[in-house]
Amino acid sequence: MKRLTVVTAVLILVSLPLACSRKKSNVSPAAPEVLVTTVKPQDVPAIKERVATLDGFVNAIITARVSGHIVSQNYQEGTVVKKGDLLFQIDPRPFEEALAQAKATLAKAQATRLKAEQDEKRAMDLFNKQVISAAERDAALQAAAAGKADVDADEAAVKQAELNLEYTRVTAPIDGLAGFATAQVGDLVSPTSGPLTTVSQIDPIKALVSAGESAFTDFVSKHPDPDEREKFLKTLEFELILSNGKTYPHKGKFYAIDRSLDNKTGSIRYEVIFPNPGNTLRPGQFGRVRFVLETKKGALVVPQEAVNELQGNFQVLVVGDDNKVSIRPVKTGERIGAMWEIIDGLKPGERVIVQGAQKAREGSTVKVKDWTPPASQVASDGSPAQKNP
Image 1 (tube, rainbow, N blue to C red):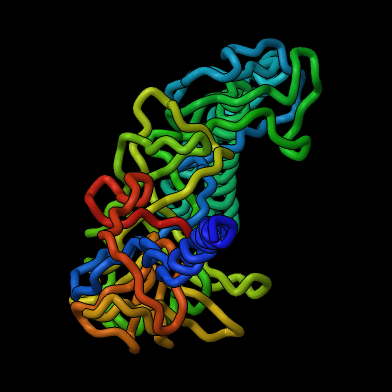
Image 2 (cartoon, helix red, strand yellow):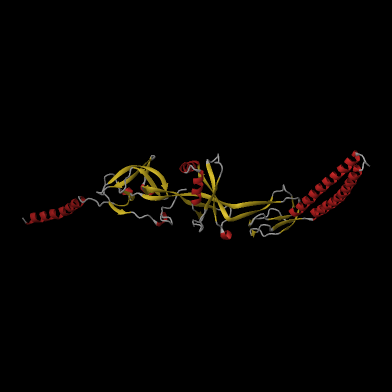
């Protein structure tokens, strides 16, 4: 009897862990936690971002206008010059001599004209007195006219000689930043020998931007009236994001759009000008321009990470009032910053999973928490920042 009691006790002790393990296996796992956002209509700025290349507002290519040897370089490369500042001096001596010779020829022609005019006056008096013939009178008139023509030609030659002498002083045609010299003192230069340097006006400075043909066509269709379109473009403000990721402190304005599209790339170029005090920006720099082209009224938008693409189709995970998940196909519009416009498939007030979608399945129950966008996705005006150009 005592032995039977011991055996019974052992069997009870062995069965306890098995019973406990069976009890634990019957407990359902906790619902996974996901972050959701509630879809609601909102006015969303359609932020556009384009790659830009900076260029001088005016780029004056400086060339020699007369032939001669450079005797001096009168500017410091890479510095700001004023309109009229001397950049190079071409040897003026041959041109001074040419001017002196032209003036001497002019003086001789003036003396000849004076004598011809006096002869003309005497010939007219003698002809009126019937002392000389008409042929002699006509000869005197023609000599006077020829003398006047010679003077006019020699005066023009003097002006050209003066101009050539002036051209030996190669001066800056605009205020701007002077580049490196491509010719040195002692070089023989001419109008066909190529540029001597370049002076660029960089305050303001231009940003060259390209837009695709479809974007251009859409814009024109929304603003078909040329006057209204021009006024609208003047209202736009542009930000410049530099290559180091910092935003340039001054806003830009639309300046001009090209007359035609590039037949190779199918894009059209337009220009934006930015103030450039201190010449901190230079031609050739790359950056990105960002601007708000329009504001979409009452748009339904969700974060891009909430949208899944599968073989060209898009879908989101919607959490119902009972916290159960359903897969919903949607039709997307355009990307607006870090958001994606949903034009069909969602209704205001529905909750969409932004993070944790890999934990959810069709019909599964989840624990929801509100999703908060990271600071990097919020622009300075509180709108989603654009990621895709």
